[in-house]
Image (cartoon, rainbow, N blue to C red; front, side, top):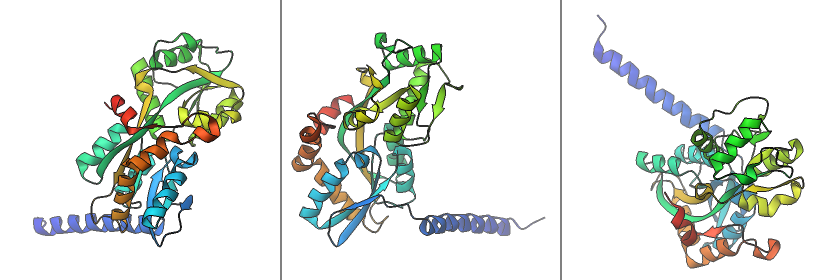
Length: 291
């Protein structure tokens, strides 16, 4: 009979080696830096998607750098990938719209400092002819059911991002498991997926911020459904636990700045000058949609 103590020791050794290998892989394959904002000597890494694509992150990062002398290093990732980057300690903080993922991260202890920072909402856009007649829909789920019934082209990001998770929740509410040639996966970010929807004359659920800023790339589409409270999209900022990452404390200061009167004013007013309307709502507005 094999010695049980030796067996336990071997299992522990294998487990530790596996964890060490995962850490080594993460360290040897650092996430790609999309952009850096600010000139300060200090820096911190932040993972997010659309707020970076649409320029809000740059506005916040440059304002923070003037106060703290710290560069914001942006890692472009959807909410699901951002959560994984924080969990593996490859970034110091994240901005995400994935309430269930955030709740899990807090419960498991690898994310802290949850701070509501603002919101936007989802629009279901599509071809102006509206072949599924979703203009008459009573909810997001009703709109999806109409699209599936006629099998009109529908674009899905399919990337486990916050947008994709919300989309799948809506399909679930509609009692539908989407599949078939009409259901098109891009595995890409919001702007690229919106452009693909225009090319394929497809329906797509885009966030309002992207639509305001990028609708010129989708001239054949229009907003066909909006207004379901479930389609309001709240953003949380999360930071690594104390000591988990090298620049965690600077990132925590950045979250405090974003939540401050100055940071909230930047969010509330961002886009007004260029697009005649803001791209995001502030945390006060967003709070009524937290569930």
